Image (cartoon, rainbow over all chains, first blue to last red; front, side, top):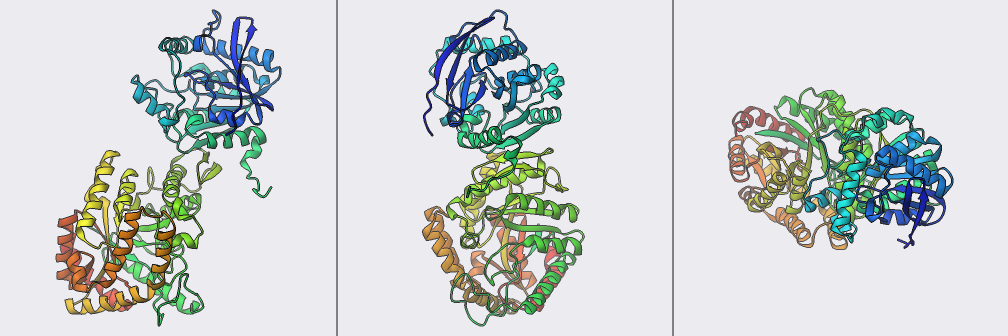
Length: 261
Length: 373
């Protein structure tokens, strides 16, 4: 895979400063990170060959300052809308990874003009309490997140930063796993949506896919074979191939192209 | 004890061993082919009346060894001509095939038969990979992925896409879905320790063929049991199916004579060129781990060179009068703990009348005693 350089930048928005990574070139693509925080996966590097990728950090994550007025997933979605308008300057394709998928859904519900095509990677927020989820034990957690734990990104952040990330997740989600307002609002998602799940994902149960396909009119569910809850790391080539085709060709990704060209 | 009646549908009219594999089809006579299909299907239908629980068939290519390039076609005929017997496709060689097509055809068979399908998901023997031009090195991973995709196609309630290593389908939604819930029982081969582990991991029923000695077979079964337990299945004897070349006749002498003749044609004619193709694949690919490849070849040689008496003693065949066959079954069951025998009575060119007589003897004199084993 080609190494693409991602530069860290900041932008001052109405509620405070937002840090983001930007790299690659081509059509703009907004990537909303998981509860683990922003990390450039090999799949994102691959997509960076055809997309200019923006990866904003949710305020308070990875040691960045929190925003006093951003306290919920809806607030976070509105902030991302401001980010898209202020930094990207146009409607764009959006990828949301787990926690980021929850944000991406609210963004598509509340700001449909900004979201051209939507990719949801095992999105959180539509999981019945008591199903799936992550265990507390770090080793067990790693096994649940990754079908191939050796492909997990190396952890370089301090324990204090990780604890603060966790606290911010609680703050934004309010500690719930099922967002009834979001479920009700799903029919308002107008963007064509690709829903991506690992075949070995035990964190977000399959019922989430049912809720999504029932709620979103133009949705396609695809399984990534051999991936658990972090398909971008478990199976980067498969994710980049599928997501890349969807973003490039829209509905046409269903129609196979000749390899002869 | 449960019993299957298995058929390979061999071509019986060759006068000499084919020179090479694939076997030239210049000698194939379609009229004779029609006669064979008719007779073989009648025999398989008769298995239901003889008390067999399953009727089984499988897939082979480019050879007079077996005339079922797609055993699902035979399954469709049997679905219409039988009422209660389970239809065991043992099986489709799924690494060679389009898994979506397999999911669809198996689902059709399950629905048409009223939920009687046993779904074999088999890697196959080495030379079949030349026939369908699939890299033998990929066989295990293809089997693993195709099996997962087939189960997903059977069980997923909404359209889905699949992005895998070997298979990519942007949108799948099969019609029909199988009748059995959550899906038809799956059987996988476990004829060596490697495949036994694979079957256990998939919580499938295991099938074992070409048993050369009972100790090696017992080790495979133990590997299967342990692996299955580790993956949430407590195997019962019914999960363990052992396939046997079988000859049941009115006397031991008759049975040995028929089996001896049938095996001569089987080994010297039907298997002759196949062995060369198998060696080629084993030598030039990683179809087997090295030691398993050697064991596979050695097992075939061993089975070819043994006398009938030696094979009976080794637990490699079932052969004799009904009384003798029941005794042999009991010994094998006591040693291996299986709950299912899969009997192939049409070995090589054994006459169909002998097969029929064996089936009647099975019905009248073997089954009444062996059912309670």
